[in-house]
Length: 194
Image 1 (tube, rainbow, N blue to C red):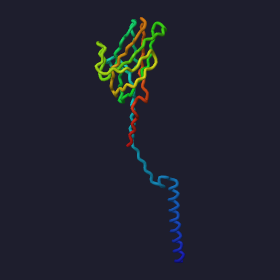
Image 2: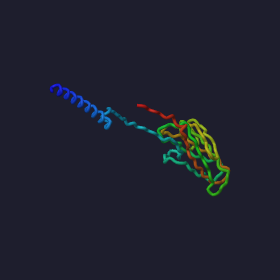
Image 3: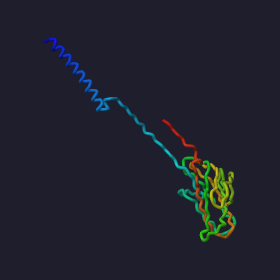
Image 4: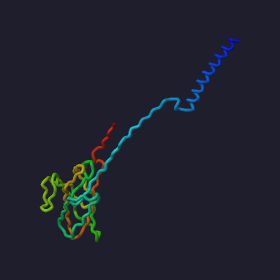
């Protein structure tokens, strides 16, 4: 009888151990959090971007960005306009493109005025004497379309520009100039890893 009780007790212990192992295994299948220890971490990243572009404005002024519009007086010959080319952004530009169109408000005549762009580098144009104490850089001439230039304009900077308009007739023309910049005219992107 004693032998039987000892065997019975061993069987009961083995059955209890097997049941414990089976229960733990089954519970780990039902609850994945018991099966393995997991850890996660996160870090906030700040991504910044900037805009770029430039625009023309009457000399000494700082209006909102937009196209420059001027109506030339109804007199043949040469007329001048003194402007600032503004870059209000935090990145320098390696060039700008001037897209211009001229129309005669009262007619569809085709002999539009010829517009020449000159920049006074290192100084500003003197409108009274039509002189530049810096270096005069010609950017191009057009009667319409686009004048492409590689003039460098720094971040938050302005350049002094003179428009020389040659008119052949006594007509009042209106010229609209949009300053366009492409991604290739901005410094290369900067990637920062941390």
